[in-house]
Image (cartoon, rainbow, N blue to C red; front, side, top):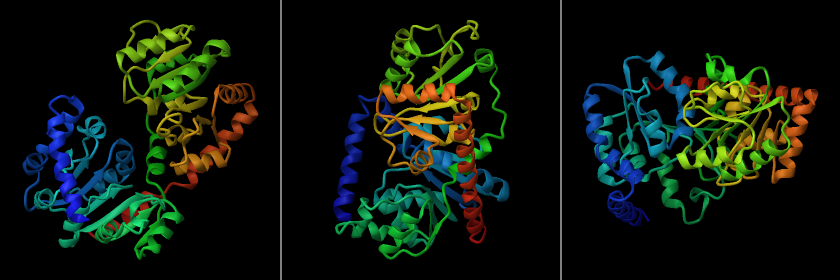
Amino acid sequence: MNFLYNIAVTLTWYLLKIVAIFNKKIHSFVDGRSRAIDKISEKIAINDQVIWLHCASLGEFEQGRPLIENIKSSYPNYKIVLTFFSPSGYEVQKNYSLADVITYLPIDTVNNARIFLNVVHPKIAIFIKYEFWPNILKELKNRNVTTILVSGIFRSNQIFFKDYGSWMRRSLKAFSHFFVQNENSMKLLHSIGYSNTSVSGDTRFDRVHEITHQDNHLDFIEHFVQNKYILVAGSTWPKDEELLVNYINNFAGDDEKFIIAPHNITEKGIENLQRSIIKKTILFSDKKNKNDAQVFIVNTIGILTKIYSYANVAYVGGGFGVGIHNILEPAAYGVPIIIGPNFKKFKEAIDLVNLKACFAIKDQEELNQYLIQLHSDEKFREEKILLTKNYISKNTGATEIILSYISKKI
């Protein structure tokens, strides 16, 4: 199987090079990987002490961020190499100041794994949540590098737990320790012979808890809010927006205001959204007065986390598609949350739905029902706020557990 895997990886790489000629996003994917080794070599000397963290994308970066910040303050003599698989993660965080090198992870060939680890030569390798690259993991094992998985989550349908998955199970031998989010993940690892596990929880709870204590003031949002009841809809997709616009146009009261931050902020998409709303609407990019509109459309990135601090209720998009986006950010502010039906892959969503602090809807009628109740019944809303805050508070602390382990390996 390793032989077939290596052939598939090599063929995929050559195919991507061809596609990159015609596709801008794939070009970034290919070009970034082609230059990764040179980029690292420019910043990392052979005698540097290095900790390497790998994130698939932006969400995993947020999980790793509390670790990076604590490692940088506790071990300033160590250099940090941060790698991404996804262009979306890399492009947003490529200028992150606490990492010494930020780059793409090279494609997982045998030769790339060897060259990459020669130039990085990490003392500790940290993988965030998932992404298991067999050649890189095998090389880490051969070099006896302390390798840990952080905020890991395992499910029974993954290849590790299938009869035909022995070749991937072997790659897990590279891990010195698995820090997983829940008991089920630990039981699954135990079932295939890995007892070097701890249930530490999810470091994202520490991250979002920290965010609530930073300065989240935004002048232009203050001017828009005007002490009104605020619904913040974050990372919305067209289906989410269709339901929300229907509510805004037909059911919203004058005392309600809405902030919508679409997941994709293409010019055409923003125009279509703005045109569909009959209430007065303003864009982030507009220079006009923002306090007399009822709907604020955020056609920029990077400020949604702060905007959630102004919410009385939050709608988190994606639940009518591939899956919901980050609900921990609004939850950290104690905001009641509404989501679409596709949330079963997200432990925090399942937990909050079971606590009745988050409401999963399947249609317009249910959206209207919950929005009207949350708006009109202050006691009901306050109950949900308390449940959400308590949930966040009870789940912080993963970062401290992992740092304690790291301190014994440095």
